[in-house]
Length: 115
Image (cartoon, rainbow, N blue to C red; front, top):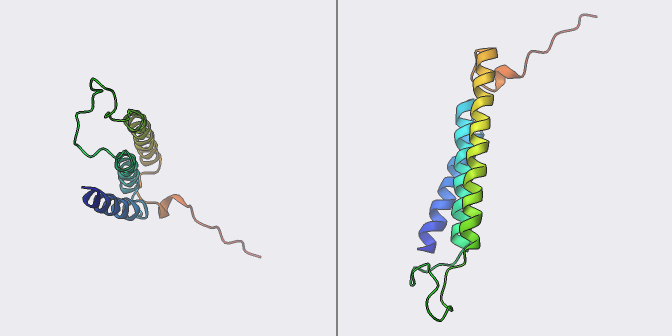
């Protein structure tokens, strides 16, 4: 299971990096959202739950799942959603003002100074 999870994390990291390096603003937002999912999967892979026991404390209290990674993932989901929502509003406002959805159009043009 860990090998499959590592392969999925690697593929999603590649896809997120590819999307962030594109010139389309919507693809950059989607790449950032994919990165948040990669962060959640990395925290999940470090939690070391083998799936042998139910995630509840039993009578003796020795075999249980650590709740810290679950709390961290929940916090990361909320933060990732907030960042994605903020970036979508930023892209919408940029498109509304400039009528372009590409990065190179936002740089502006250098004016030639005649001497």
